[in-house]
Image (tube, rainbow, N blue to C red; front, side, top):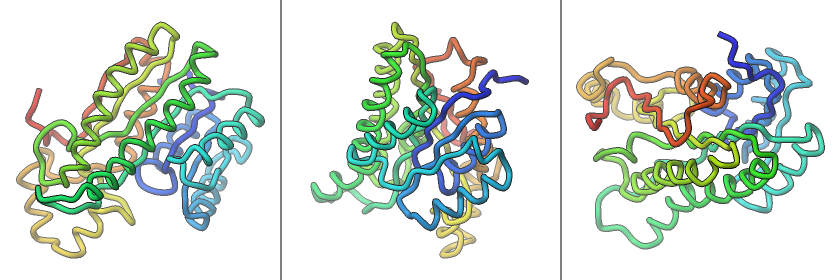
Length: 258
């Protein structure tokens, strides 16, 4: 299927591994011009090298730094404008679920995970959307999580921040729609990849984790980053031109809510 994405310019926050890296590969395979980002320069250089070996080097760009901070966001967007003249798609793949479990949390516990999972995305989306609205064209995908949809054992601040992202996406879609800018969300379930949290959990308590997946996920397996990436790329494509304010849940059937 031709997704009509050739030469579109895509910025992917958090793209040196896992879902972000798989998303970069998927966009490059569609002929897009892709900007990958990461805070660790060594990991970013390695990811760039891998993508350069597989795809046209002229279609890739790497920007180092923390893309949750305006001091990095603004020069990154300026560099994209200088090289390619526009930004068509933004994938906000930002966040971490590492936090303190339980209910007796400090204000710092909440602030830390809200900063990592909500405020960084707010800054990035606000900066990118302002450019898209001027052009009256663009697509934004927020990577949330199923923890934002229903009760899970995840840390409370992480779950609340991901739920806020879902609500933010829904409301932004209504505000940006008149300017032909679409905003959607993807809510992944348990995705396994090298260096990810589930790899660490498996190493620490393999039997318990495998039992959890077999019991809670009807498909009885982990998701693959490529499966989430395909949903993200679809939402940014012309095939999804009438889809905005939506959330695609990709969790193997784990969530029970409608």
